Image (cartoon, rainbow, N blue to C red; front, side, top):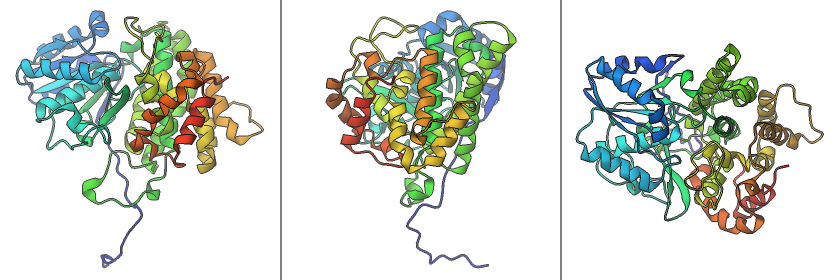
Length: 436
């Protein structure tokens, strides 16, 4: 057969999908040394935060690495909800300490994302703003390969162990943004559900809402063929919803329906049911990461960036109380019900399917547009998520200040099948001051 080389394609016909190899199960932490030894590394930086370090898992990891003749050092200066300042300090620490053969991140998304930044900026020249997404940064592509990075999540939420994104707050601009490139994706994801047993219920709830929004936004994102065609050199990490990402998102939503509430309300119990719920949540987080890490997220995440970046005095239970913060999982959930009302007409069948996966036994609403928002609101009420952006310290008068931060996230907004205007975002935020 002959290839029709003269055909001029204007719409996209190609999607990309990628994820790291995965090791999953109770006790998987104790196999990191063996895995890293396969890469011939001899000196490794363990990246974590002080809270996780105090619990002992990083030292246990270091002891395991020593069995395979791998030297390691623990850096526990990760900032929960990292900033450009905290990441720059982490990078500077790593640079001063000399050459590293590889990295292990153990912690939540904050630790994994900080390790991605350290890996990038110790492997190649430049500064954070060189690589941060446009229009905030220059969006340079990493010029070559990075060092091996093993990601060991201790929360079920961000899916950062699966993704090629690194998220941070830019303090001077009061906005959250990130770096997105396939080279940032960890070399291996090691998922040990036992590491989540000590999580407070508030952290489990917030992290779980991040999973939910990852899966829902990915599943309702623009279909990949609706984008303009890109040359190979310009293919981006977020390519739109596609058949492979859909499978992972559907499975993540089904696991959330099965185990989310149990993980919040019984997550610290030692019985088999609680352990199963924890394992299912870890699996859901990774699966959702395998979905949205390729297809993309949209309005709830775009809104979340200024909500977190412009926080006033809110200090959430279950988190460090030394400074105000809105946990990422909370910030993405607060406008999700209204965002999915807005996007419903662009893909009704997907919104309804998502609602049925998240809550198979939910009663049908008279208005199909309300089905998914009502499922989310009931879930958020059940697990103690704040009631809208008003619950974290904002009012309707703050909406004009929040809108510009959302509009800076064009990479995310372009993934929504119904592209929002500034007025649309203002309306979504206003209607999200209270969700019930």
